[in-house]
Image 1 (tube, rainbow, N blue to C red):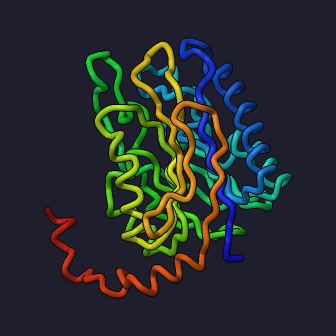
Image 2 (cartoon, rainbow, N blue to C red; image 1 turned 180 degrees about the vertical axis):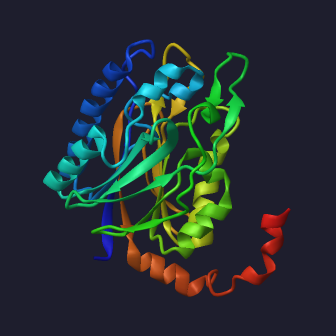
Length: 293
């Protein structure tokens, strides 16, 4: 099929961060199941949730409490639950989770579930930030919670399209975005948790640039609202789908829970790549110095 309907789900976290982890997860999972059903009802065939969707962006603080939010993938309960949902609705789901491997290795991960409910694999976030957010004492303290990804840049051949995943801070690094294109991605999903401030202007700049440079669609997903008790800033939504010409195909609001629906057209990918021969004209034999600097 040439045209594929994409559903992007942006949502606020409704439970105070001081509540127990299981309370957080239960409420968020129930909310996102409702939103996935809404997206499927609007015709979405591939649906992506936001970064670590089943609770607040807990990396605003550094405490061992949040290790309990992690699960194994694919054998954890949340992956299994959403496999059943994907099978029921006949949709592909990009499911960003806090992954635990073994006894105590943790990753920021997204599982990819096909439309028949099968687990296709996972992507682990490679680039892990660790920076303060203003003078509040809060920050993007991700190195406290996550090891860097170690599974490369896989592309998943789903029922509807060849899908790649990049997660939040990854978007600042063009190397992985190119690797996903070289590995065959037709669309790259970037589940995020990003607040207003220093990098907001990059939200609508970097990812359209990746789409143009690599000749694929990019789907950028961001949560909305303020999250207590940290209130580190406004998660400004504006989830969007951008085509390989850099044109925005669909965009969400700044501050509302929303299912954003857009359409990707594989014929447009072919048309753009036939005109802009960036893959043909690459000079990889000249790039060795990049990784040696």
